[in-house]
Image (cartoon, rainbow over all chains, first blue to last red; front, side):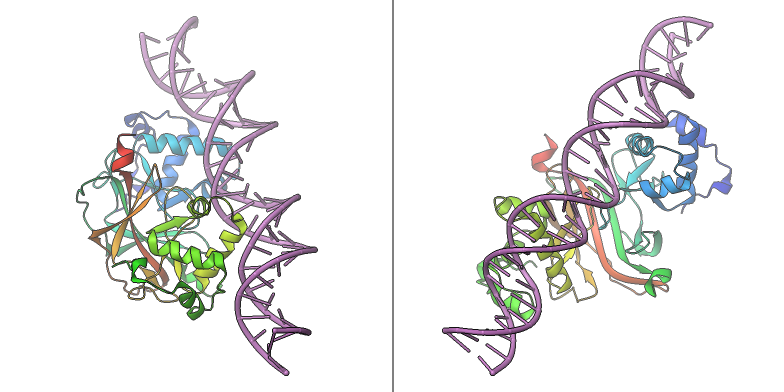
Length: 146
Length: 146
DNA sequence: AAAATAACGCAATTAGGTTGCGTTTAGTTC
DNA sequence: GAACTAAACGCAACCTAATTGCGTTATTTT
């Protein structure tokens, strides 16, 4: 289950525990990830009303990823998309969700599909698996009628 | 199972049956897809020794996709990647594979993981699903030792 | 509080992907 | 199979996402 930020989490503390600098921007960015299923750089820029330089966003996302806070989500629309790691399923080197994610081909929003279960990760000879993602794509309700 | 081109397939005929022009390039391109699990534009360019203009490749891929010959495969490295449709599982509007695909984060090669089974597609209210992909990422044997 | 380290913003650059248009090739009709 | 139509092709230019370098500012460490 996704943790909501009405749990009154201390985002600065979470950053510290992961060895990430506690700048105002990065605290707010982490907060964002607890609200949204997944985010692209563009979405983050919009959330900050374009007041934050895009380079800063790119570097913060890379830093979060390196420290195991977030992980990339594959998609067909060639945009880098990140999602929050959850302690139950993600480790520093192995990322997964137990459910599928739906990405709208029009508005690019992402939704959790709890009904779609991901298979468990099992080792396979010759492959060093870092992540497992079950990706569904199509159109969400709002975009279907366009 | 993946059909191999030692089945002596008539690629020109397959193109014709899908309403795609049978140019020399497109016949060879389709042939390529029967050899390789999935392809990016870059990989196609290399296969043709950069003799084919990239625009031609992009447009051929879009055409193949529109006519239901290939479909996009999501990945985290923001590259457009296509894979051959198989008649068993893909229709014009709904694409899936019954097994997972492994993408190497280093060499970008793709491998079928038949041991990983994709869940069946089931309709969900408010979502119009076009594709389902089970994506595993990491490093292949060759790239792990770098 | 001072020194060391990392984040930030700006400008410039790279790279994947797209568009317009004139030319060539494939498909169609007689 | 010659003439016409439609689509594919190649080139140049363009767009947008992502990256790099570097001087400045903020954070972390001691």
